Image (cartoon, rainbow, N blue to C red; front, side, top):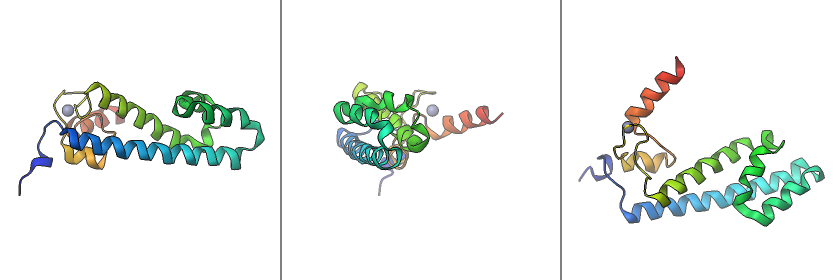
Amino acid sequence: MTDHKKSRRQMTPEEIDTIRQKMLERKKILWNEIMYEIKHEAGDRHQGLFDTIRENGDRALEDLLESKLLGLVEIKARELENIEAAINRLESGNYGRCASCGKWIRPARLEVQPFSVRCRKCQEQQERIESV
Ligand SMILES: [Zn+2]
């Protein structure tokens, strides 16, 4: 039994692929739920936004975030923001690197929290600063 996942290292291409697939699937689900809520909860007033999302897919995220509807779907929209940011890091090769200390984040941590931008140590430090 190795502690492969618990040591700080870059994720393998296979692990990155798995995470990317998970995020893409999650993204699809979130957009579907958001579309549903706009359609059924927000009513006709937001038909325009609904159409924008249907036509532009995930490029409509900004419109959604700026819309007055945000209260209704805020948690989902924020999760989408996190997914987009994580996918960008995947594409640029920075995924899994701590934004504070630059070391690799443990893959075991990323599996549980795929949007982590910091290693646990730096994250805890950051939360201490923010809570002051
Ligand atoms: Zn760190």
